[in-house]
Image (cartoon, rainbow, N blue to C red):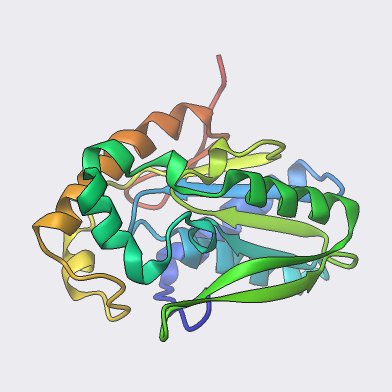
Length: 216
């Protein structure tokens, strides 16, 4: 997203190093890494740290945010959720997954693609043209990102919106008004995002340690 403010700290850098170590041990051509977690858990910051770390090793990685792919316009989303019932509509199906999957496939094929990109200042949806020919890795971040198809490494940040409550009320990014409606939205997202933890290859704990999850 355009004009997003990243609040990167040492914990993001340290976790990023551990994830980079895992990626290096599991190399794959045109790799897709996905990062999921609740709002305020640090998905975008971690994606940025990983991409910059890879760049130092001459690996070009592009972050891609699923929040650019909502079905509803940013200026209309809040009222749409209220009108249709937060408990009914907030969740995985709010996103244009066909469009997301098309971008992932374009990356795999090294193609040029147009995709939406939200400008957080104007709250308008712009169109971004990207040439994936020389992009080595894609880092998909979002609430439900690890549920997407063809993901090679799935990362889950195990922090709830209640654990990051202070960030929601003081975050300088000021993405949304914090009121009862927003808290209900965060609670609904929590119910759905927490179910994705079992899909992860790597768990980022509440202390931002990184633990490899053994699959059953």
